[in-house]
Image 1 (tube, rainbow, N blue to C red):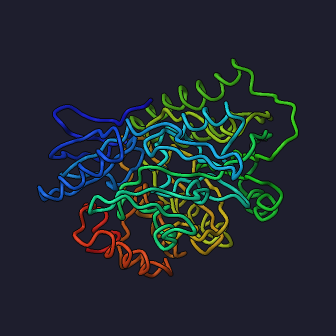
Image 2: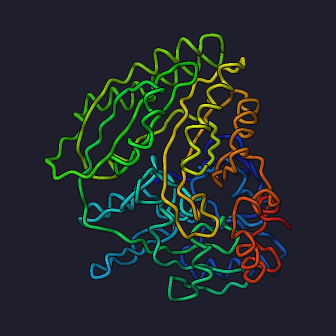
Length: 439
């Protein structure tokens, strides 16, 4: 299993390499009781506490100078309930292992994000999502969860039990306690047919509503400095299975999307003037393809080229205008952007601090190759996103604070009141939470 990125001498680093922390001590509990005991002991010693998964957040949401809890021993499936079609899984389980284990049992999550390296609790606590017309984020598929709170007690919550905690803790930012187990709704495994094809950006924007309405899962990548996109449509299929042939898959997913792309980014980082030319080639490198496979093999793909990312959710009806403004901004600037912009959607959900809370949403993600200066691009993009009352992904780069969030999240006060009740001494506080939730 992928262990957390970490440095020498007790420093912890995230996957993107842009966040570092030096915790006073680290613990790897083997049971919920051991974890609860570690939280109680940290309180006695006056240490703050943070749990960290695989470090896939680009924000300092998991950073601490206190006690760092690593969940890699809290893994595996606790139980499968075929009658209610749910699975209960330990919080440190990587999504990859969950997906493979469920497939063996003939089961699957309904929807997922585009990578599966993260732990289930890290992914859900930050609001990780894929794209979907009716199916929402991974957290929206949670039916119950177990939480160790600041006083070391273990709290279970669902729609029936502690429903106020359930409403918030599915995307809890690590602010309400440490999630120790999650129960997901699952369904019998199914097949998806993926149709990937290049399409001019103008056509995608003109037909966006139609493309969204006609597909269960629609997303696209726009390559800055070009008018080109690569579109992806995933829909349920009766089969037969027709996976991507191994060599072709290696060539397209590993060689072109990771290998050549890595080299192109190295060249672009060294000589930014080459980026628009490279973008023209990159945007045409991937030809159309169709394949049919089980969900996790269609929804997810490897991401080996390291990058830094910012993503905002805007109301779905605002996405075309927002993208046009983003393109105009890039076109009139001297920015050189070598990574495509990713666009996905999600239906409204009822989770207090979900980026799709109470509104049908579209996500726009901007990326920069690791090690290139991203501030100017991200600042200009963020100005556009916030003008549309965008809500940033909790695990990706942004500069927003509690004052802003109280305006764009109607139920923001509900979350902070619950936090006051569950963690009055701010045992789970860190600099990031102080900024986004207020002191």
